[in-house]
Image 1 (cartoon, rainbow, N blue to C red):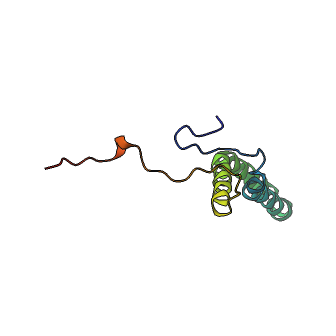
Image 2: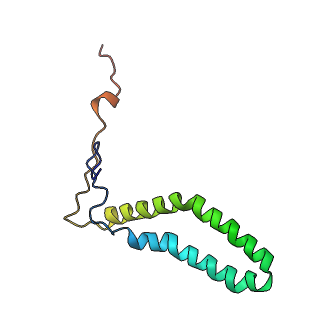
Image 3: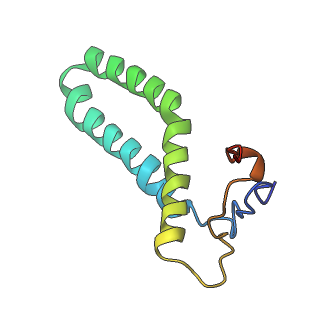
Length: 106
């Protein structure tokens, strides 16, 4: 699916646009965790270090969809705040008529 059937939003205009946000939100925290554990805890306390590695790997896998979703959301926010004239972001629209509350006339 390239476009939202309801509002017309193009999900991925240019493949790879979310790469920077994925790096910032996913890869850099992983690198920081690896550096902190390897150069800090694993060298001083091997058993505690291995335990921390296992626990943090489980957390990384468990929270991956949330981190990737946040990266996509940040990309969308950047498209809204710094628009490209060629970017087909639809304008806000009124809700469908079925969602509007009708009041009886007297």
